[in-house]
Every structure is written in structure tokens, then in C-alpha cells.
Length: 349
Ligand code: KG4
Ligand code: ZN
Image 1 (cartoon, rainbow, N blue to C red):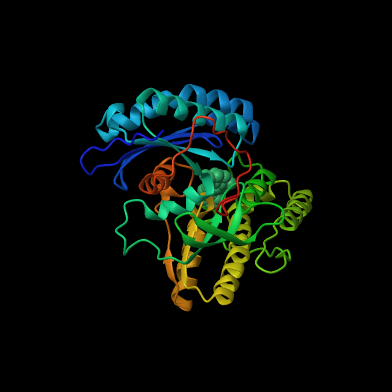
Image 2 (image 1 turned 120 degrees about the vertical axis):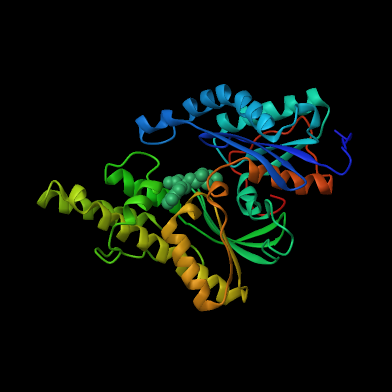
């Protein structure tokens, strides 16, 4: 697709995100957000986790209405769109296929360029939405990307030049939150609930181990096992233990996860000498993590960038902004592009 539509100086990008269980569509004009629609799929709650086939079916139902809503909110029509950007991966194959097929068809029908976006790069680039150049993080910076499937420290050298310098060797931080919540009998996704209950609790009420991982890597699976034994042991003594101590348990497990994350982020700053620090991904919505990072950065003199809540969890605005930068570079995809269930954030792979 080599024909690039120009409307004066305005570039309108339609962003499509469908990697997991949220169907999202967004419109940005010249890097400024006009609409950001997210259709959450509540169907997975009953199953305690995302059921891939149900997610694909719900995406299929939600995608056209989500795009309609986004265009309406943006106050434009589909004819105004300059290019469509979609999440190529990583994610659930069935879910990705819905977004990528829609985007290919839209690009073909409207005669506009198609742009593929790496979901994790999108999370990082959310920091550039609505930002004047001097307010966005300056390159190079370190980004702690913490989501349901990823926990990485990323060295961000440019918009699309990213290098993972540390990552989890087992569970992701979001998974640690969700699994701890499941052990406590809380519904999926448990991360936001742990955050909510933790606000009323004492983070020093209970102590949990910090599993060891080499260098800048993370490990959370030992913590999950320790937490399971802790809950089971206490429930044997008092079957209402979780109910009675919910806030303290949530505050304690949350603060352990936060300590593990911040500990490695500090190491990464020491090793690289970089003090420009950002966070991204669903877990960056955690209020305890946001507060602890603000404290740490005040002590250590970091220039800290925390995204607004709406850009932390999965959204299409981050896909649209990544698409915008690719549009400016003329980096377009062709119709034979396929989604990737696994897709490294590192450039070129
Ligand atoms: O980035 P995201 O929306 O989807 C993925 O790409 O995985 O991240 C979802 C993860 C889930 O594990 C969810 O429990 C977690 O982010 N999460 C939170 C909070 N909000 C979302 N974890 C802790 N505290 C929160 N407030
Ligand atoms: Zn995500």
C-alpha cells in the first residue's frame, strides 16, 4: 500500500487492539487522542481466567461497534482516516486474528496504509500520547513493563529501538497478582482487587519470600507457592482467615511484589547509569507501585514517568500512537502479514 492520504497537515490513525480479552479502538490526530474505546469482556469472570475461544468470539462481536463508537467520539468518518494500525502480537492467536483481519479489510476497502504494532512496544509508547516533546520521556530511558504476560526491564533507545535487559524467568507480575487473588478466592482479574483491598491493610502484617533470580531477571513462581501454603496453613486454623485478614494479606503480598520489582529496577539504573525511568502495562495501574516508585525516584533523583490509568491496561490509543510514529517513517505492512502469538519487544525480531 503506497498511497498515503493527506488531509492538510492532519494525520488520523485508527488503532485496533485485540490481543487478549479487551476489544479496543482509538483515533488519534497528529499524536493527540480523540477517542479511546475499550469493550471489556466480562464473560471470562465465571471461568477464573481468559478463555481464548470465548475471547475470539467476543472480539468478533465487539470490533465493529467499538470502531463505530471511536469514529463517532472523534467526530470524524472512516473516510478521514489516514492509516489503520493493529496489534500484530504477542497475544492469543484467535483474538489477534480478529483485529488483524478487520484492519487488513479496512485498509483494503479504504485504500489506506496498514501498520503493524508490537503490543509491548505499544505499552511503552503510551508515554508519548498527548505529550509535547519535552514532557515525554527522553531517550534512552528504562521502562519497567509489567502486564499479565510480561515482566521486563526494557532499555528504550528510540521509538522502535528497544532491548530487554531483564525479564521474568517464570510468572509475570500480573500473573502473580492474579494467582494470589485466585488463591484467596477472588474473581479474575484479581490484580485490581488486591490493589483495592490493600489500601486498607498493613503491608508489614505478613512476610513473604523474595525468590532469587540472576542479574536483572525476576522470578515470581516461588512466591506463588509460598503464598498458597501460607493461605492453606492459616485456613486450617481459621476457615475465615482470608475474610478476617483480607486487607492485610492483600497489602502484604502487594508490597512483596512491588519490592521485587523496584529492587531490580534500582539495579538496572545503577548498572546503566540511566535515571530516566518509566513504567508501562496493566500492573503499572497499581496504586501501591505508583506510590512506591514516586518515593524511590524522589530519593534517587530519577525522572519518573507514570502513564495515566487509561493507558496502563490494554487500550488502542497505545497502538494508534505507535502507528502514528510508523506512519511518519512510512513503515507500512502488506496484506500478507500474519499475527504473531509470540513477538519480542526487541527491535527487528
Ligand atoms: O497490560 P494488560 O492490561 O494486559 C496484558 O497485556 O496482559 O495487563 C493485565 C494485568 C492483569 O494481570 C491484571 O491483574 C493486572 O494487569 N492489573 C493490575 C492492576 N490493574 C491491572 N495489577 C495490580 N494492580 C492493579 N491496579
Ligand atoms: Zn497489555
